[in-house]
Length: 563
Image 1 (cartoon, rainbow, N blue to C red):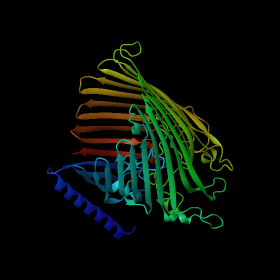
Image 2 (image 1 turned 45 degrees about the vertical axis):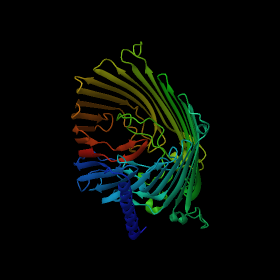
Image 3 (image 1 turned 135 degrees about the vertical axis):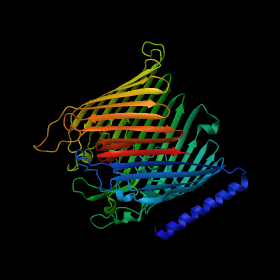
Image 4 (image 1 turned 90 degrees about the horizontal axis):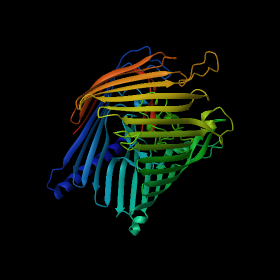
């Protein structure tokens, strides 16, 4: 897409905005409403010779890093329009590749009209088909992720029986757009609603996605015959049933072939994708149960094919679908030290979540009640995905990850509340095929001195029995660093001020303190936070999706506001 075409598209969108605003002015007497938000995350890096690691030292030549987002929305009746600007001056460390985030630009713009049963959106938009296994566009600033679609979306709803959606456009890639086109449709049919049955819900759903990418023609076999066509198609078929607190969801997905490298000889081969997802749930009488099972094979879907030489390092943002890890998303640092990351080339995984509230004024519930939470997950991967050097093992599966936890929340009186957590994790090594065990213990205590002043104390301990090095002088696997402890204290003076201090220390191997302290101020919808600390290299996760973060030391200023 050349620059002239980009200018034409932007001009058309602006014309739509003006036209839509004129229509709204002709139909209503009110002036409408403008809302918006601003967010900045600014770093000042300090030299620190203790944060060198296998990801490198994050101390850049330019000590500053700043990510900024300004969003404005206008609504008037059925009409709405919006725009978002971004500034990277320069991008903070950990957003890869850094050259993908440069300078300032208008990243999102849209106009939309919504009727009782019909809507149309032109510009940049976000959407999802089913669970997202074949298509999801969304923004997550913590991950530096935004794969919105620039194009058009049309939806139509017939009563509460039929819902139809159609989309087309080009996906965003970093601060520009990829040279590919995405088209798709999604249909949901509520069967029981046709017969006036509303105490149960039964729906059949289906989706189709097509990606047009001329670069796919470059892939050929040893006889120079094309391996792929320019179109990459994917489909999804779903069933949803809900009654009296019970729910069941099933999804089957398939994808046209993409190119993968064989692990025995690294030749390029075309593999079609497939996947299955089942979710069972129940909620009622103090119980909450969720069971999920998922099987994936060659279901990673990229905006630009991953094996293309020019696009090998596009990282997290080069993704068109959504495959979160089926593991618990911990908020405690030691339990989230090395989170499991899904591999779209192959995975079989299951997760169980159980919640139970003990009633008040019972032996276990006490005066204020007690909450119990159990979680367990397990995952397997193809053997050749874990051991790339292995020959001829593509149909064998092996253990990849196990995570089991229990936590109890207890309100002792009006002032004192505690949460105790225990987690057992069995992890696969990053540099070898060895398995490592971890045992995590957490005590989280909150005491309210007054309705506005409170103190929260968080204590963590991780026990990890050491393995042995396979060769003399071999670098120890990052998951074999022995025991850790961590502590955090936070004093809040609601609703304005909060101060905190924390530390995380691996006293068995690294012997480095990863400390942090800071203060925040909140007024109305504005929050300002300033902190300083040393951060360990690892994974930053949001919604089951993770990105690598290098180690760094420095100041962090965060400002968020909405109006």
